[in-house]
Length: 201
Image 1: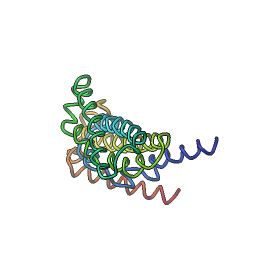
Image 2 (image 1 turned 90 degrees about the vertical axis):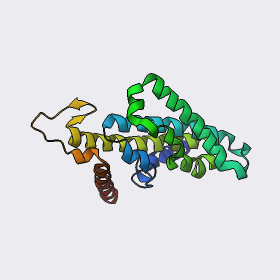
Image 3 (image 1 turned 180 degrees about the horizontal axis):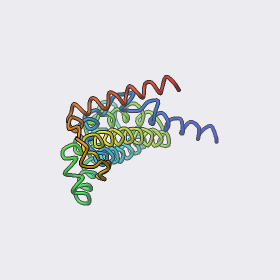
Image 4 (image 1 turned 30 degrees about the horizontal axis):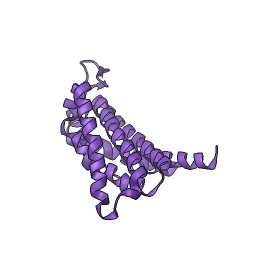
């Protein structure tokens, strides 16, 4: 593996674990806590966010030198909003059930600090190939956390995973897992386990 490839892989890997947007940077908390009551919702939100993040990082890394510094942030938001609008219409047209489940949280991607933060911290300061590696790494890192959080909450809250019922009628669902309190509790435990594993590693 060449040095360039190693550098890109390291950038990608940082988003997965070392600089995970949820577990370490603690950003993007609104969708993380609000829509992860099922594994499917968590995964769908992660994919929608990933598309916006990757697309906007590519565009901004390409045109960064053309954007005047005094309108940098508004320009970033405009670019992000363009991709969010496309995503919102696409999901509503082809995946109406998911659109109904995620509700207002797809349009709210435009103010997700993960998206804007990566444009300001990385895409606007690095070449396109590095911006792509960063965007994909952060996207996968964000998506796996939301999906796992949703799976755990759905399993204990409904006895199912991705809508597939695994536990019989004998199981008494832990309704709190589907409520905001369950989201905070589950995420807190996940972060604690993550910190422990990081120290062990």
